[in-house]
Length: 327
Image (cartoon, rainbow, N blue to C red; front, top):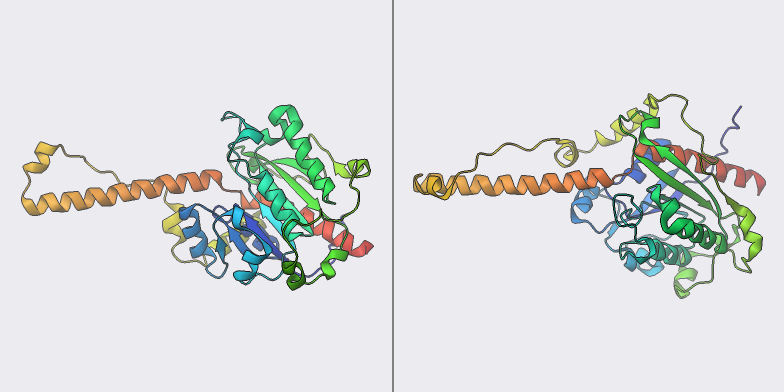
């Protein structure tokens, strides 16, 4: 029998590399979390976020994330960080340059962790992250978490496990810091400190941290769904969230683009002058729709499956609940 979750205060969340908000949708399903700021550089995704969450500020560039920049957009507290960091450096479909790829943002993510000093963090990426650079990159990521005082769990989930018709495996990491004394320091005090802060937890991380890394080739401590049909509660909750936002169907649910019969230059020249102008206008609109459709497909292709992320948040809630019981 699973122990009931001990209630804890609503967790303030910073959502990095937000995409179209799949991570935040997931914790809206589970409850207990509140996103206080997004960080997303893609302009199309920013438009979706603004439609879906108009009250949440967006900082476009992860390189600009500091306690000061967060304070400027009204964020005075961050309990946890969620991040769907770019996957091309680790994807089996690419060159897998990992640490040598300029799109690798794990270094910036570490900087943000040291700057903001959250109590926990969740990271999502492709399974190729585990084997990149013969496994050395992933081992380095885990070791860096340990040096900052975090316990780490990780596992691989497939979208098929929550009812999708495709596999879409992703690796998920949950990092939690059991040392809570730093949370008595006010945000304003921390803003006065410089951003090159000491590692979370302080002291000598050393070899004593190694035993804290919970490795799992399979699914680690993450519980798997008992049915491949998915979780109706999660899906219904997600639908309820999406349907409350007018205009999202235009951005997210269109699967096709209208057909358009191209005319040659001679055929256009044979048209009456007003028809030529109308044709050019229609063609310009068609091109705009095609560009929009391309951006839509890219955003959906990179998106986190909220129902999968919801499982991770439920696991995090149990970890935080247990920490509260033990404190």
